Amino acid sequence: MTKNLHERVIATDSALALLASLQELHGPLLLFQSGGNNDGNSPLCYTLGEFCAGSADVYLGNLQGTPFYVGHEQFEYWKHAQLIIDVADCLHPSNSLESACGKRFLTRSLLLSDDESQLQEQSNFTDSAISANRA
Image (cartoon, rainbow, N blue to C red; front, side, top):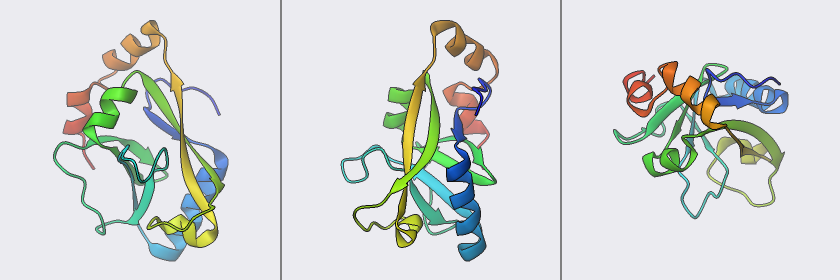
């Protein structure tokens, strides 16, 4: 996996494989990272239409055709980082689709340097540009 500064969110091969499997079972999906106390650093996976991102939520990009959103407060925390979605074993059931497979998505972050952050912002990936490009 290479660091592509033009993408705010990327995924490991394991995460992409799990997404593909879930898409086959459930159809189009949506990933949402709220940053709340209940889900920690795990994005929640829903069937498209089961969860509606709010007007303050920030669209970060697509992973294999799956839109990825974060809550605005979480975006403020991570706006100078690239998010890397990975997979781990699930110890506790959750409302997220992948927990039925004994897995959970996990968010890791790669802090960008000041120069990398500037390049990312110059590539139209500022908060307002992302919100304007909502899926």
